[in-house]
Length: 356
Image (cartoon, rainbow, N blue to C red):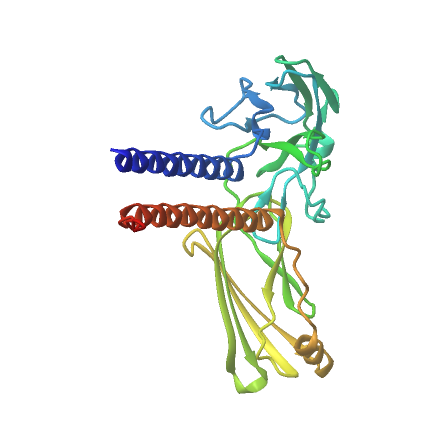
């Protein structure tokens, strides 16, 4: 009976230890995976569609206007916090990023292309550039759209950027929550012919930058770029690449980067570019030459790679791994102690000899 009770007691202790270890591990896992605060839910925005909204199913402004038209656009901003928040509002024309994506609010502050006749930043003006939104409240931010008197064909593209500075995190003072609302304007439904210009090739130590221009007030969608590099007159292919699903905003430039192939020796090379859009409905071919110097190959060969800073998340994972190892070691130790006590209880006790 004593042996049975002892076993039950030890089994209970081990089970309790396992439960505690599991609970600790669960807490660590939960706090590692989920943030302590959902910053995306601090505030929300909603477009109040005007009467001249063309596509009612989208969450951006898709407007059809007339020359000289003036109208007020409205966006509802709702504060979901228990404290007041401040938001900033900016407008700008759309640009095309180096990744071939349309940036409706020009976050990278890229220069405007010379083909851009009307800058949406000058046509769309916020009534206020900053708003204080009361806790658990909402406001309607208004912007004035003033169209030029001269008629235009094609599309004007840009956006409204609404940001909130976040100072609640100790190590993320510059962290900002931002919403981008696209604005696309047209006066007629005229379909313009696509046009793509190749402007120049810019070289750096580790990449070739191909600069393209969309000089027409229309989007270039589903753009594919095929590049092929050959050496001199030998026509020996040394590099080829194809990138699909790119997009260019109206009247913008694309600074497309391809890594300089490591096998390029000093010498003169030719690059051939084949571009196509909308399943080859539109296609263009460009040729250019560039030179690789001996100095460039030396820099490329001997430049040491930059050390990457280890992110906080890596340290968290390492910490979790160490804690798990310690908990597993503790569990193994408890099991061994249990087995040792069990063996000791099974051993027969030695009988004491009686003295004569």
